[in-house]
Length: 171
Image 1: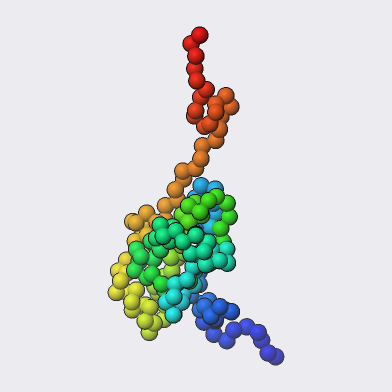
Image 2 (image 1 turned 120 degrees about the vertical axis):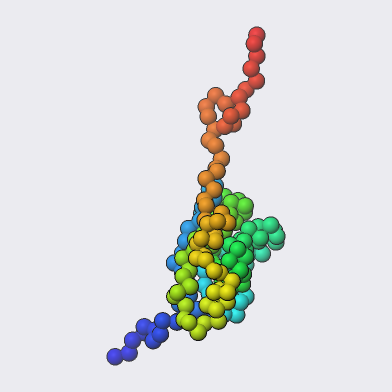
């Protein structure tokens, strides 16, 4: 009887990514934006990012500042380019979507355990040299795992905006 199950734990998906080193999707939120983030280890070290099936430079319209926000968790750990990032975002604007994705990336990276890698892996040796602590500790100290709770305040009745009142006249 022939089985369709993979013969080893390390399988490669259609894009050539090693799915054995993927994490479960994580959610990041900011303002009204929600980002579902999945990262995959990439041996070629291309570090490509895709937002809603579009390359990040196209989706973020070439905004360098937004790109730096997305790469900050990787740079904090010193592993920039080791992972491919797939993001599905909904709601809000580009700024909120970028910050939601950065939180989702940080949550994915905090789940990565160095002990799951094989001892002969060059990535393990590299991370052992660069990362002396648990990745979640570094990300937490850098503030990358903290959700920003600020959102737009709702408009109240009798006011023009959330707090702007009509001009008051004494007589």
